[in-house]
Amino acid sequence: MDTPHVALKDAEKQFQDGKEILTVFKNIDFSVQAGAKVALTGVSGSGKSTLLNVIAGFEPLTAGKLLLNGEQTDNWKMAQWSQFRRAHLGVVFQQFNLLTPLDVRSNIEFPLALNDLGWNDWCDHLVEALELGEILERHVATLSGGQQQRVAIARALAHKPMLLLADEPAGNLDQNAGQEVMKLLTELAEQNKTTLLLVTHSQDWAEFMDAHYHIQNGSLEIRTKESGRLDDAC
Image (tube, rainbow, N blue to C red; front, side, top):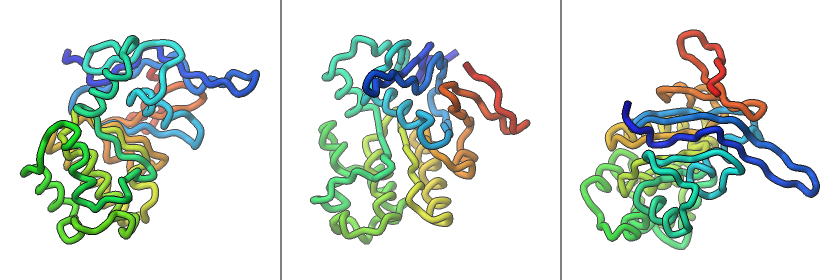
């Protein structure tokens, strides 16, 4: 079997709130194969965004192991995490997190510059697919929410990352705009063979993925398309 792009083994995450220790999730075994598209759902506060932050290296596990491309990350220093995120990771944040002093083109170019890359045919393809051609010179602060979301997707995919983490990428959009964004996001990920892990509260958006996991009461379950049931995946 091929090495998973992402694997969590017996993973646990806790936070301390005063004297109280809060367990977000525990005993999670979870893997995502290269090129897969996986949805992670759960109610607000269930820990789905925290799980994404752990995979991105923004937060450490309390216990267990995280492997990326088969490599254990337990002892990674900040420089190793920075190198991984710069070269291999794309992130679409719920609040976009665009560089507001800059225009659209400069936002898309940002991850390229970090990797000593220049604008290329893939960038032209992203701009065309996401219909950004007429607004490349506009400052992102002047754009609508839907336009900003498209810029965020283009920026996240510009350097052809191995792994794309998307946190509610259509959460701020209406149904029609969200449908179009999800369609483009999955198509572009497929074209680049990028592994996609999507966090969403929407069952509709989860249907765009190959597999669907649900986090509840600190545990992870898989929802099978055939039966609609939730089966324990831990």
